[in-house]
Length: 249
Ligand code: AMP
Image 1 (spheres, rainbow, N blue to C red):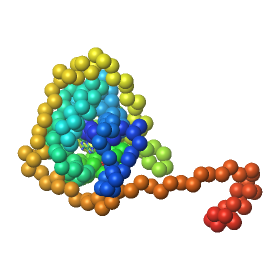
Image 2 (cartoon, protein in one colour):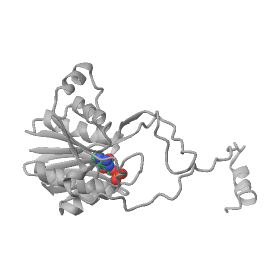
Image 3 (tube, rainbow, N blue to C red):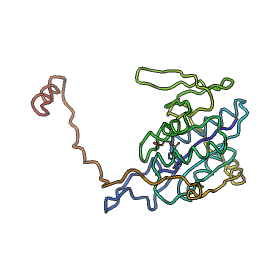
Image 4 (spheres, protein in one colour):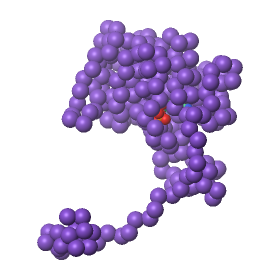
């Protein structure tokens, strides 16, 4: 079985995001970049499937700048077998990424494609859904449990009303939610082992896919500051404030 996992290089979640002075985007110079946290969960899940006895090869794929190789090395250190970077200097948006992933999934003949539910930089929550649609594959988003049974994936997913379990015929697209697992710490020996694993670099231009951006960013701005809150003495004081100051009730 071939498991393909998509990993994106994003601004580290601990970094305080700064907007560029010309408001054209977010300042990425000299800031720590890491694997998108949901993608770390996706890689961890693939590795756990293998450790649980599923006969699988885990291929991790990233689309983006050359430095994404570091992100792929991290995925290899978690336990993936092989990595592919589809290198592109142009800004990639979910549709472009989904088309690239479609190409890789078809070339690799992937049985399961696992993505994060969303990337914490653009917060789009679109790529997995677009990929499933392009490939006409069953999809289960926001997975909190994944079990492989013969040629099916049993996926428990978090929905508004609670939990829902879907049975998908493989090949299928699954996107990982926070509670799917807790990724392991990466050990030094595994970082060393990862250096020896295969990392193939393909130029996005060579694929003949239209990955041109479809969305234009007009302006990026910091959210407005919030006023400090107040502590009220009791419920009556709260109601008074809501009625007479905030005028919301
Ligand atoms: P998004 O739709 O942008 O919120 O991203 C959802 C998921 O798609 C991410 O968690 C990744 O698994 C995958 N993804 C998005 N962009 C990329 C990329 N440039 N390279 C690889 N995977 C990506």
